[in-house]
Structures are given as C-alpha cells and as structure tokens.
Image (cartoon, rainbow, N blue to C red; front, side, top):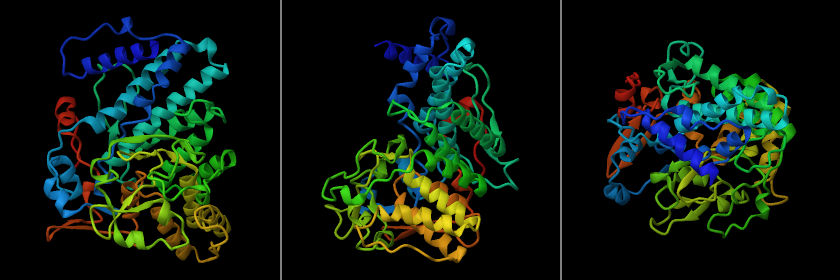
Length: 450
C-alpha cells in the first residue's frame, strides 16, 4: 500500500508539471526520503518494466498484415508507421512512459544523494545500481526509436534525445547531441555495473550480468566492437545459461516461460498493436529460412487461423500476446559476442558463441557446428541467425538502422498493400521516428529532420 501511495504521489507531480495543469504541488510534501522508500519505488514493475516504445518495430520487415486487416485498421498512427508515412504523430504514450521511468529514477537518485552515510552498504549500492540501470535502459529505448543511427562522423551534430538528469521538472528540456546521449547512457550503465550485485532476488530488477549485456547492446549499436565483445563476454562469465528448446512444448500456445533462465532483465513494450499475436504474420522468406531440425520453427511459429498458409509468432519471451519483449537475455548476448568477435577477426570465439546458442535451439544430436573461417562469410551467417533468433524482440528496427550504414548490408524496405507499393529507402531520415507533436509543441523541442 505504501508503495502505491508513493507512486501515485510521484505520478501526480509528473502530470502536474507537464504544462497540462497550471497548479503544482509543493514537491517537499511528497518526496519520500528513506532507502526503504527508494526500494519501494523501484519495485513497481508496471512503471519500470513495461510501456517501452514499439512504434519503430511497426516499420520492420519481419512481418506483414493482411490487406483485410489493413482495411479495418482505425489507428492512424499505426497505419502511418507501417507504411513509413511522415504524418503528424499525436500519441505521447510511447514517449511519456520511458520518461516516467527517467523521472522516477531521478527521484530515487535525489533521495540517495541525501543518504551518503549509507553509501558503503550493500543495499544502498544495489538500489543505486538498479536506478542507474533503469535510467540508462529508458534513455536507450527512446534513442533507438527517435534518434538516427550512431555514426562517429555525425554523432556530434545529430540530434539525440532530451537527457533529463534531475527530478526538477522546471528545468527546460533540450535535445542533446547523439554523442552526448550515448555518453550519458554508457556512464549510467557503468555506474550500474559498479554497484549491482551478481545475484538479484527481485525478478524485475537487473543484476550485474544484465548491465554488462545492456552495455554490450549499446556498444554494438555504436559499432564499438571491441567494447561490445568485452561487455558481452563479461555478462556471459556471470550467466551463460540458455534454454534447451528440446525441453519446451511446441504445442503450447505460448511455449516460452516468462522470467526463464535466459532473461537477465525483463521489459516489455506498450500494446503491440499491429504486432500482437493475432495481427502480425511472419514474413514468408524469413519463416522458410528455418531448417526443419531447427526447433525454433515450431516453438516460434503457429499456422494462422485467419490467413491461409501464413504464420503467427508465438515465441514471446514475456509469454504475452499483446506486448513485445524488449529486455536483455543471454541469447542476445551470445549473438552480440559472436558478431563483435567476427568483426574483430576473432574467428574461434565467434564460432563458439554462435554454435553454443544454436546447439540449444536444434533437435538433440542434429545440429552441425559452423566451422566457416572466412570472417565475411561468418559475419553474414551470424547476422542471419541474429534476425532469426531475435525477431519480435525489439531489435530489428535498431539493427536495420545500424546495418544501413554498411554498403554490404543496406536494404530498402518494401510493402505492398492492396496492390499499392510503399518503400522506405535504406538511407531515409525516417529511421529517426517522428517525435509526438505535443512533445515538440509543449516542450519547444526540435522535431526530427526530414
């Protein structure tokens, strides 16, 4: 009950200072002050682990929707995202939810700054590390959708996101550069690594392996492969567990358990909309790329009841039909290690990371290890397996964006609906998703360039 009261009070403050209301309460009356209060705030799964952006994934090439569903679809923003139309975007939910995480994290950090006498205690460090992790994760989720791909040559001038580092909501929001944005995300994750425990008893909270894995994800997106390799390797030294897909029941409606041993940090999007279990149909060429002995072909996919010959995706790591899992898992970390190793010409480590993952995905005794030593060919296989393993996991939009910077992997996206073709060129500015119009107007924040 105490936790709920604290959350309600803090959310009231968030709303009241967002320029939607003129009156603001006295913040001193509602800010909790103890380490226990901080823990209670962080334990709210609905605020810290759910509601992350999904709009970027609506534009990916891993799925399609039936023409009949398109004709009935009434949500204009989902329709615009699906065909990459550059129209006004009014729904603030996918922006507001991660920034609520940032706001609450800043509240906790403000509390902790007043409890310096406890800074050497294990519980204090755990709360501090958890808080920095949540803020970094929220910043990164927003960045991957609403900012362009990271490139050293443009990061200093390209728009990043507003970096809210204080609980004082009277401070004006300013869009940082992309370089500044990534520097802050990295700094927060490094603080998390320094303070998080190896074992985390709260299921919704990250442990140290999660922070290493999340930072590996960031470095991969920046093409900092040496750091990505180091962080992924550090995560796997702490937790290298994988699900053996032979132990799963392929006939279950949702075969993959929530909070399974691969999950280092659980997080889900807001309502998946177009990409929920019933609406999204798996891209046919992608489905056919799975070999028959690859258990993912049966664990991940279910023949559609609505569209003949099409398949729905059922391999949701949140065990949900309505939200996409976007958290950190060991399976993703293995793929980060494999890709980074291949790009660094560490052939043996790349092979072993990929083979370790795939052995757990194939029927027992049927998988043949990949032994290709040519790094370019090996990298292509790793990227194919990354797409096949991480589909509907919130990674494809970011992957398309970063791989478009490489001539060999750049790709135009094409959709055909009722005979009309829509196209997203590989170098399109639309890969930085349009900011919600109310955010731009009320916050006086620059819109993404077009």
